[in-house]
Each structure stands twice: as structure tokens, then as C-alpha cells.
Image (cartoon, rainbow, N blue to C red; front, side, top):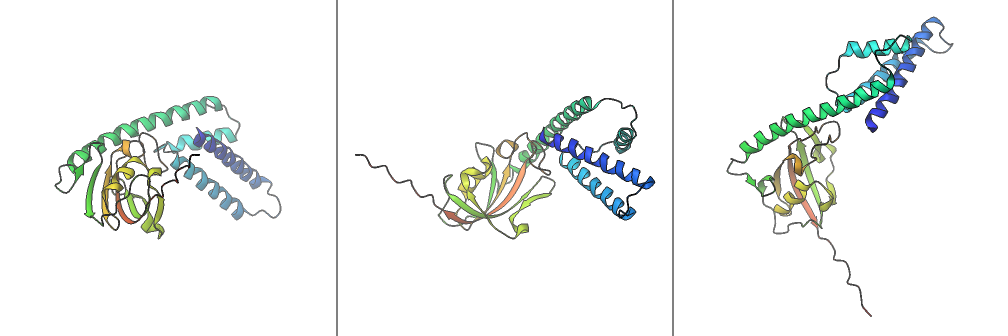
Length: 241
């Protein structure tokens, strides 16, 4: 796993930096202040903590983590070697993903079952649910067209994970280059219209972790304004001799 390799490298960097910091308390090189060492140590901690958070390990036993670093730095006997440590990390990450995916799948199914009962919500054969806020014009995109949209994406608990509004810039992309739920959903609204999309995991990012905020099997909610449809230009016919 690429993420685990990065974490391993960063963890080694953290150990080396902290080891140097400890040595400098005894014999600190000229020109290096305690404040600089403290700041560098905290900065390494931020980087390491950020990577651990993105890896979605959940709540770790921090005293055990600190003890492992201290044992490694102090040359003490470790509970297991680094090869075994990497194996444990990978197995734990897989278990975490499986458990998170099962929990999110159940929550998504429950939400969609209730949401689908609302009069304004339509469920398609694929499982996509949508609600037309504003129908827009008669110009609707096909999968081959390019669209320009403003949108906001949230999790079931209301957490916003992406938004063109927040970035202050609309997004423009070929419709057939995005997730299945968007390809289907945006063809249901006209240019200038607005639609809410409720995507089961198999129409979104499936059983994989998608960045730091979208856990496996997450049901996603999107509010989308279709600003402009750029119709695909047909490829010129080849002339035959």
C-alpha cells in the first residue's frame, strides 16, 4: 500500500528528528536553538499525524505509539520487528476498511429506503435517487457532452467534502468522465436547472476509500446547478475513395 509506505518513511523521519533533538539537549550544535528544535519536532508531529489521519486508522492507542517510538529510539527490544509491524499495519487497515464499509453500507441503505418514500424524490432502476429543484431549459446533456456546474457534496451526517461554491469557481468537465451517479443524474435536468442527487455507494466511489473524507461504501448527497451544456461535436466522417 502506497499510503503505508509513506507513513513508514515519515515515521522514520520523525524518529530520526526526535533522536537528534534528544542528542542536542546534551551536545547542541552552535546556531541551533532549543526553540528551533521544538518547532521542528512539532512540525514533524503535524506531518505524521496528518498522514495517520488520512490513512483512516481511527483512534489509535497513543501511549503504545509513543512507547514504540521511544523503544526504537532507545535501542530497546521491540515487541516485533519492522517486517511484522508492516504486516500488522496492513492487516489492520484492511479490517478497518471492511468494518467501515459494512457500517456505511447499512447506514446508506437505511437512508435511501426512507428518502425514497418522499413524494419529491424519484428512484431510478439503477438505484439513483434524485429531486428536481429547478427543471431548467429543454437543453439536457448526454454522456458525451461537457458540462459546467456549481455543486456541493455532503455525507449523510451533513459533512461537506467538496464544493465549487467554497472554491469560488464552477467546474467544467466531460460528463462521461465522472462517477456513474453524476453521468445518469445530470442527464435528467436541463441547462440552468438544479438537481439534488442521492448516490448509493455503487454509483459513487464503491468500497474504496476516496480521499480523507469519503469512507468505503459511503452514500453521497450532491446539490448540483447545471450552468451550461457544451454539446459534443460529432467527429467528421471519413471520406472513402
